[in-house]
Length: 308
Image (cartoon, rainbow, N blue to C red; front, side, top):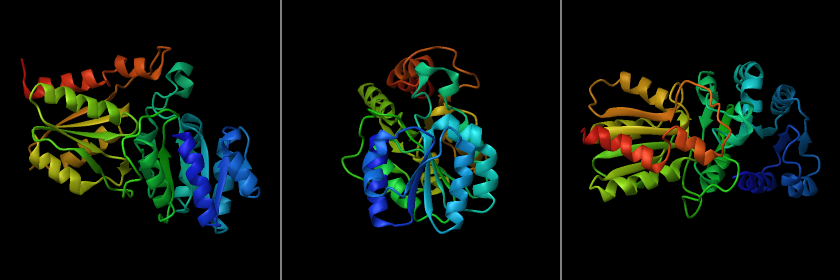
């Protein structure tokens, strides 16, 4: 996904002279093409992420459209005050991009895990929050970020994520995309865990349970029209994310559901629990640890539809 980010930023820079890229001393070779073509529109701000957000704020106030890019925990937890005060308070059009989100860097330990940052950031007034599932969704949201008048946060994967869309979808912030139809259960999936949702639906289909799968790439604003429909139609609606069940997609949908008691669909939140991961393992093992695999997802949905 990070290669798609570099390619799309170059494409956006060619179309819009306001686009500039700031990084915190990572991905330098990744952006060689951008630096060669636009040497005055790439800024390595060093290992000083909070300062990078302040620099971007100044650029935005000067009429530019900055994109800030580095590893997710360092551009979110470390920069909370700067994102809140420098960007959100002034409603500046800066796009903050965290790469290697969720458990992408499970092997590097807790310093590189990011399973709480969406819950933290979605509280900030005026901040749009998204998490594309694959490279085509990322390209669509990057393009739409230039249509936003305020700040945007995007959490993306690292590399090697399966491509779920054949081409760039007609996707904008606040909208979802249905990948698979069903009649009994529905999975709303945010981010790179989407392939597990599709595989879980296939496992459920083998047992005679048809499941709708929806890619839900925007946490804020929520696609309320989709939520209204799925909680009206399905017995079970599962939110799926590589993020804590507190504050992320599951938490957001639970808040929305509390305001709509007339809807009967049951909500189940699938994500990481309220704990730090103390294992040193690859992303796939971390997902298995938390039941965020096709088998685990299908098992939890089946247990609700067909209790023992």
